[in-house]
Length: 235
Length: 280
Image 1 (tube, each protein chain N blue to C red):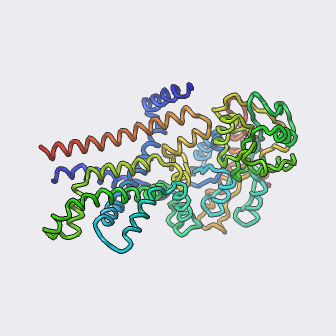
Image 2 (cartoon, rainbow over the protein chains, first blue to last red):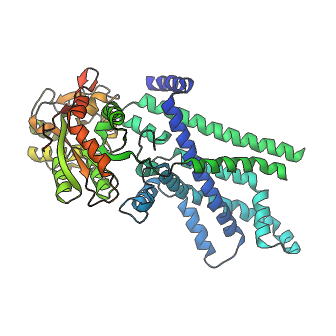
């Protein structure tokens, strides 16, 4: 398979040349997926903490549902968002279809359950450890959640990275709601799908290598941020 | 405590600024064209759209899917122009009031490609139906789009001409990929299956392996493309003026000569054939 060697050569060539189209596509991928992570964090972190710390009827069922939603098929999410945002759908007036906004919505729906479910798991364990202290100091609920999230922040960072990984690697939803329109809604994964359909496997693989490199860079950046914060905390 | 949060805060601010930077809507002078993969994968749009955009100032955003899906999307009013290749379905679209009028734009033809080994012995034949019959008789593997696309509809009509019931053979030698043209070609090259494709996609396709064109030249494999402006009376949000100028450009001299001059590897991929006065 000479395609492999060709793919690496192409990947380095593309990055070295800072190809305008590639930079644009990478930029959009990052913008869409990071925004989706932000939304998933705003919704999913409190939701997970709520499920972990508050006892209410139907809580067990809610936990099962949120866990199950981690397995949402991207194509199904894409279809649902398409049907909602279509001009024939209830939210057509927003005119979001075939824009990055539609892609952000789809990815947010996909990764919010991941963030919520993993957050619940982490916070619940920590809550059990702290339960006695909280009880003896009669800490109010919101202070408790804030304390738990703060103490679990590094584990939660990994949760957000998991969400980011799912979002940035996903193609099924964004290709339906974004339409893979050149210079408007084309991201890394839809570009890879397009080149594959053109039979240009080397270029498709090269783009895949670039996407992996970006994922590595994002993870590396977050980890070094974490290491920096930890060393300052211990200083 | 404060220091620990700086990183998070910075990241959050960065993300927030990204949200604000996302354009909610496309700019006014842009239209969405629901089209088919062959026009995009062959590079035709990359060639002709910049010319139109330069001449008109209108940005054309192409959603390239199978003809069946393109028509469904346009029915949902999610596009300003429909540019596909399945004449009966296009005429139905207009008759039902979704389109203003259908115009011929250009044509190319379908070909049947297959492995060099040619297990059904059809290489060099011209008659599509007879060749398909030979493939069926030999039970040679055939990869079908199976996705209600223009190419798929045409392929099914040719099987009908050949008197072969492919539904009965589905899953055995007749394999429906349920995917686009490129994905189906990748699959057929992978499993040594015959496949029918439009010539433009085939010429532009880069993963040919040892595959060659086996059957070509039958009039029944003629592939006509048509363009339709989505009806603003049915879809209130259609950008009627911009959509009309695109349709007008495509079917008159500027668009027609742009299509005719597009070549790949020295081969002309599409033959412009809009009627002179723009009547269909």
